[in-house]
Image 1: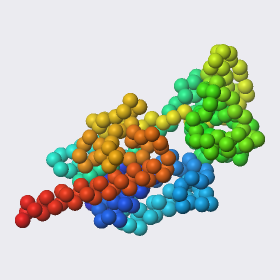
Image 2: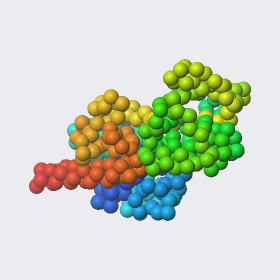
Image 3: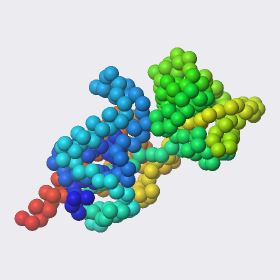
Image 4: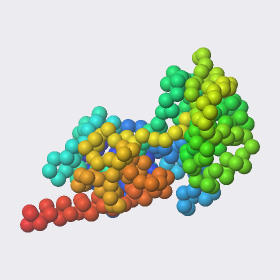
Length: 315
């Protein structure tokens, strides 16, 4: 970090955080974006981004994020690679402690996103990195031509299955319910893909193997019947858990997501939440970007109010 005080600090460099950093810096706020890893978040896992307005033909998730980062920096946003350890508020400013030192600011945006939920099947933990994965674009090429199982029924599961079908003619999409919850357009892509076989009312009860994944035990959720099939890889997409450890004091919904109003304001004045960490009915890159823009706008108004009040007191 170049300074020890900022107007606006964004924690999390996914689509929401990058948008907020851009809008914050562009509005004149002294803006810092912090993340413990490279920018991108879940967007880096997108092989083909085809539904973000204005990006047509489709682009890769990495390209999209690289452009967002360059755009934010072009407006003056500073980006720092650091792990945030705690966030506290003292009077009208926040103290943020990181593994690279402490900084203060008037406003904070929590855009820490969410992490992949585990399936809980026997063998999942043991074979993580040895055939079990939560990122198709990261690990899919290792299993080119193999027999690949994909678990889940939402947008992410179907999109990842579609990508994996470009690497293998044996992609088996397993869902524990009798229908998908993904968007209809994505479901249509799956139905038309000859490399994808769909198995409903089924879950993976166990993942087996030696040095790597060699088979899976499938369980019929209706009859309870189990059958074992050979497998080279298992990709799991069964939802997300929001990363809220830093802000345990904030209000959350039953799923653990941060509750805000339509201005992205949390229960702590000057602290905002945006993106996948926030409670909302629909999580997409477009909604994350929208959250980030709104949060930055509100942060600008909040900082302006504080600075005007200080100027008035001095006069």
